[in-house]
Image 1 (cartoon, rainbow, N blue to C red):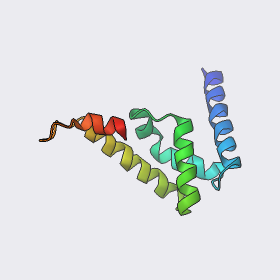
Image 2 (image 1 turned 180 degrees about the vertical axis):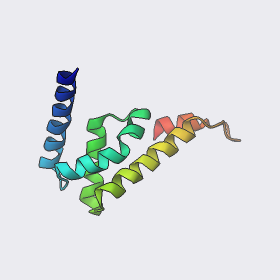
Image 3 (image 1 turned 90 degrees about the vertical axis):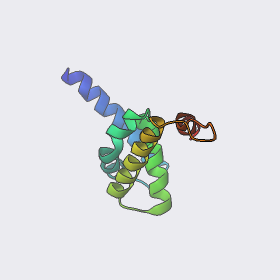
Length: 102
């Protein structure tokens, strides 16, 4: 069990290091932002590589604190989740379809 956890952690660190090498974010910032958003991201189907790329892109553009980026992504993912559990609008558009398109 411990060996599996070590392998998973190594994969995350390798992924973060690769993203950090090609962006303005560093591994520590990616880890801090991921800590805030990872659970909610996983719930809506965003994998760790996608999350790292999103964090690095936002970090590169805004230079915002990683904790703020993580909390912002967590809020966005939670709102997408709320939309997907919504109802059909008056014009016949299902909010789940909107979420899928986004």
